[in-house]
Amino acid sequence: MRQPIDTNALSNYIQHNVPAIKLPLKIKQFSHGQSNPTYEITSSTGRKFVLRKRPPGKVLSKTAHRIDREYKVISALDSTNVPVPKTYGYCDDAAVIGTPFYIMEEIILYKKIDPWFPDMAADERTAIWKEVIHTLAKLHAVSIPSLNLTSWIRPTPFYPRQLHSLTTISTAQSTSTNPSTSQPVGHLPHHSSLLTFFHASPAQPAPRNALVHGDFKLNNLVFHRTEPRVIGILDWKMSTVGHPLSDVVYLLTPFLWASPSPALPLLTELALVGDIGVWREKFRPGAVPGLPRLETCKGWYEEAVGWEVEEREFEWATAFGAWRTAVVMQGIAARVVGGSASGVEARKFAGQAVPYALWAHERARRITEGDSGRCKL
Image (cartoon, rainbow, N blue to C red; front, side, top):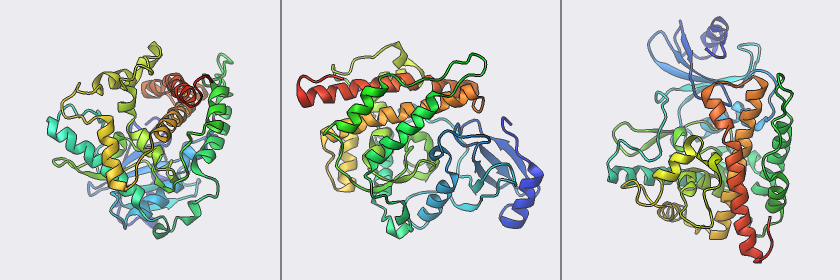
């Protein structure tokens, strides 16, 4: 395991607190989970569970490692039509295995899901994407008071709040330094101009509250083995009460990277790293039979939630979402140079910070020029 845990200490805790898990245990760490180490626990009966814990050492972003928040929202959603795994307890005592953790049921063996679903027929691709959109709409329709999460509602609107928080986080991450080279991670490209845009643009979406996941993507969804149906939503560390557009644009990112608009050119070769280059190919309209178009997905969402997504607000939310993703990737880069994240996957994600920042700037530039006809970032 990359980050071993004390099996004896965990077994002692489980024996006294989680009777559903029978000793002795077998434990292995999943390869995924860059923010919060994630482990599979197999009980003596063969039943499998998942343990998620806060990473060891100093963390630059407290919001990215709030596993207590994950546990609270998953437990609260158990009584709704939003599909979530069953939880088996939260431990805030760092003395047990080094950091706080929680345990939940395992509802699938983790594997990478390609968002164009290459193994499906065309009609199945359409059906599964419609199901994903409707699952997100179910989440956004949940009554926040019914979940006893009213304490999550803040007087400051979501996007200004996020802007303040992410600016603070990004600034801290930029100072993380490689001890071997003394080279800091540094600010994201167009740092100052993007902050100016997000603070001042009149295209910022009007306030709207919903329970948002914060990392709603296909690899955080569990699908039924034989039906186009979502049976579980995972990884709730970024969940909050906020603007539902933030989840929508994040989910639709593959479609947005493949936008045919001539005003959004291929930025640089940097934009072809990792998944981005594949998305630009696969999500071009008509490239893969059965993949819905961006406008179709937006239409499904609007129909399910009962409100229309205003185009300028969608564009602003897309720019903000790209910058937010850049900050998240910058955080992985900071952990790589600090030694708390390693491996091919971590370095791949870290390498996407710059392309996402450039993409955010390009989107912001388009909005600014459209608003004024002459102002430029």
